[in-house]
Length: 208
Image (tube, rainbow, N blue to C red; front, side):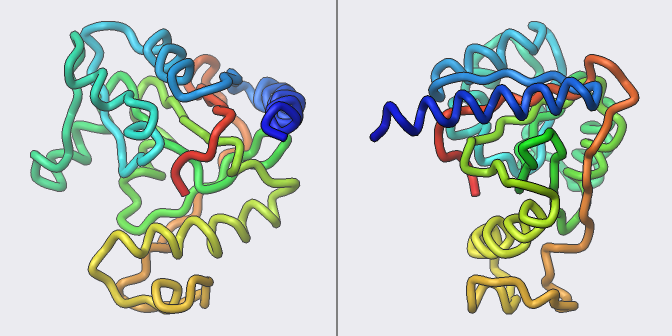
């Protein structure tokens, strides 16, 4: 069963990578977390300044630990003032992120509360590296949006001391709560800057 899933994911990943290439973005497929870590480090020059939002997937593959222990300038936003962290991220060499969902033809979907993550994906950092588990690949933009709103956002809400309908019910209510974490929606369908956006597809369930 596991072998069949891997074969399916590899075939699907090649479709996604072709879609990314048609959108002026780069894609890579790896079979496990260890290879994902190796691929990510190959894309990051030593001495680089690296920032990120709340990228659980980067922690799960061991990338954050590797950056903290290696010859890199990793910006830990938990140790910085919010605005200081935001401005430093815009000027960083590399920004790490995942995607809340992704279409099988290479469109990335992200939802944000404070907008620090989606704004850095859109512009600022010289390079953006996405770590995306194959569990986040969807058939089309509509299903990707539904996944982002009804799967990723309700799970993400559980991490915070907030009161939103999705935290209580597990599904999106398109709420206007002051605690909403769905303030900004970013659909990344093309990059004008060749070599800026890189997506590492991992044959594993990462993040949410």
